[in-house]
Image (cartoon, rainbow, N blue to C red; front, side, top):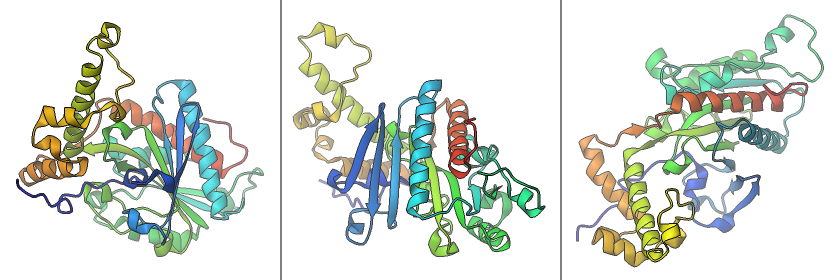
Length: 337
């Protein structure tokens, strides 16, 4: 059988949680159906991850279109962001520059620009000597655009601003790419490791991190896109899971007729079912299947970047959560937006 070099067709993800192979390396808690996972990458376990050293917090949720659920996500996001700030020993009066990365003309890439539209900025008041109510720190916000719009490297633009206004720390917001369609628009990642703009879709730019700017950098991101390889691979998994479920419940009409089968999962899958359905392909593990799909799609330029059809509505909700969460983490006397 044709051998597959899985390294040649590595599927890139911006999420540290998708690189985790050993669940013992992370700490996970669940709050009101919202899962929070903490992963600390250092020199002792770096070989297990394709990520920089740092702390990665992942918040996983299902529905933010519901007002109550979105508020729960926001509260947890605020708590985790404040936790990262405490970890970095950021003081209450430290000044902050909030950077919204991305292209506001492309909906799935507009999370950063939309988020900074609602950031409470106060730096100009301090510059002008205007009295600011207690509990508000100096905050600036900026959208540097993308290289295709400006012709400039985003990291260089940010670096020039940092040198001019000298903030004590940065918060960077960007849209990310996932390697699982189940995580799209349902995950927030917070990390102190910085970010490489465009890395998820193979458009690597200079990183924005403490190593470059010599001040703490907190990166906040939400996966808004996946590639076709991921969707095809997920479809293989869904078919296998569905087949296994139906096979086990063939004599249980009540379960068989359910339109939504919430208990269909990989835990219910029999490997023999996979081999029965897909023959030779069924003998491959998930990494090898992804590599095979990549080998077919990438050379023909069919590995498209895809986003859900309701992205306009969802991105608006997500940007509100991010901006409100940042405001409430940076300032003390903010009423939730």
